[in-house]
Image (spheres, rainbow, N blue to C red):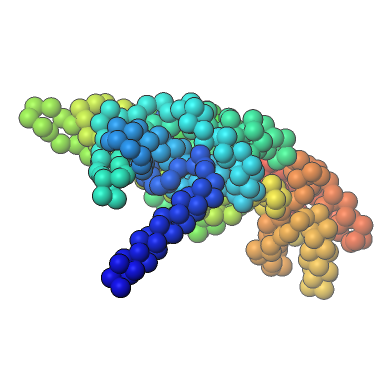
Length: 428
């Protein structure tokens, strides 16, 4: 009886072992990482991220397990840049679907090694798991995100900057320091060298990504746009937003720089903290904000400031790129302000406002009426990018369509720029 029972147990164990072997054989092998665990450390440069990644390895012999774990960690580091964190390279469903078609070849270890600019010599963690049958390691890697992005573009996964530019035009970004209300950002740049250095560091990142950058550094810059800024000014709008609208930038970036100083013995050491924010110009909507820190070191103010910028700007640029892709779907944004300057009675004013609403609906993918008074009508327009490549094209259609609907009034321009149309409705 006992022998028969023992045979049953042994038979069950054999069957379980065979089933496990069959399941393992049926499970397809993949080049993707096993653990997919990693954390962002820093943006080392405009093209490189430092990432701490973990890997898992199995097999006979400790050395074999360790090498398999290291290979898995390298893949996890690249996987993080592609999929994980707050700003992965694959930011849309379409991009992830396109990458699925090339994922297996992409994660071949020889291909992965191309993107490793550096890896630490020491492990930050190395442990045995599963009763010694597996090894888990963790170490730091520096990934060449620039090369990775270029390869994704060449494989048709990501859209190239040039292709986005062809659809929407080259985006313009304004870089300007953040100051309290009533403060002058241009004076801030002139009076604080570290603030000017921060602008230059941000500009370096932007130009490396082929954005068109506006960095106002002259006091007479505001004078050239004084009339426009006065027309769009109000008590609740800050100066940076008004400047961005006046010059017609697509996005404006503000930043603050704070320096901490103390003495270690006879040496003064410094640490910088930089906060970078990106705003949509037409609405002043916050697109992204990040804070970066430098190491504490006995260096010049400009050196620690630039180091802190490196820690903050890359993530903000990822939010800007997502905004840019979104505009490709929704249309190019314009802020259009109509001022009713002619002499019209109330019924005529209502007819004019109705006509403006109809005309705007005809030229836009979508629109939003912000303000409607007897003197002012303020709209946000998402215009068709294939038809309206510049403000003049949009104004021409608005003028002609309005003239066809209203017989006793004419639409005239006061000022046009990239993102802002200031128009007036006058008597014919």
